[in-house]
Image (cartoon, rainbow, N blue to C red; front, top):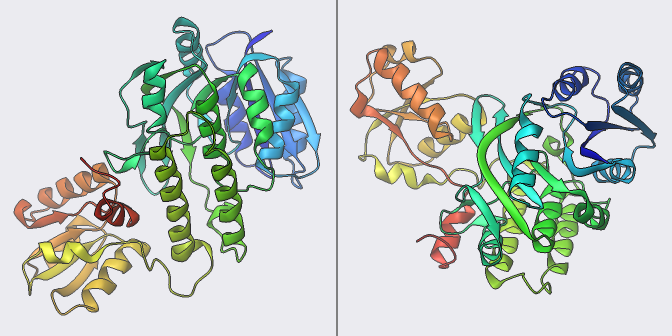
Length: 387
């Protein structure tokens, strides 16, 4: 038996698969195998998989008809021989010590799952970790962890990150659970599998370390308008509701599940269903009431997010928009009372704040407002979250 099997679903990723597989081949953990599942690729991805297998005896290749991510993961799991299972998406890459670290945690603490964070690489880089304390969760503490399985209600934030790709799972438990996930589910499949695993395992170790690089793919199908989006949300809801009778599924977890479905519905309204009005419920305009009335506002940002802030100002008689910039040196061209940074990610906003100050903008005139997803506002009103 191998220590770890790493399953990589592959579909039309000829431009990224080399970097992905090479990052797995240089893992410092010995005795691991790589299972490449060519899910009916129509480009050269399948041939590249075969080339990798010719060069390494640690690589298995499966070629199958296209069936989607869940189908590919199931196919890989059927041939995997590792004591533990890891997943890597073919357009991402991992750091060389990832599986040595996660396997050591799993074995040293005798846990069924080791969970780590990941590095998101999109328009900017962000660090994403579980919002619980680092350490082992077993017995009653596992129940505490379940209370943050989808959302950490006290922090109004994600709880355990849903991605399977930053985790290591004991195969003897995962095998049955992965096979339960409906192949018709085309998003949230990671969340559903992870949640089901947590309900059925003995113990988990959470580390704040990050090894997995999640690369934003602008061609992802989840970013394209889909008139069947509501049908797909219903598939997710039906699966979640099937878990309600599990003895460890608490009332708090049900509230999390229902908020998660609410989040999916809002995402549909904002961007996933192809509505002509985009991002209708994306940014709460409460921020305008934290700025002195009549202020001249210069926005720092670009794209849809900055456009939303601009529309809110123009459709209100409270503030006056003088322009929008994306470079700190441009601020000196405008007369303003405040600069409002429109990025959601605080570390990025802090970086921009410093660049503005270095360019001569008064630090006291630079504002940034936390913008949590809008459903949290109503969850707080309902008494579901917050301290």
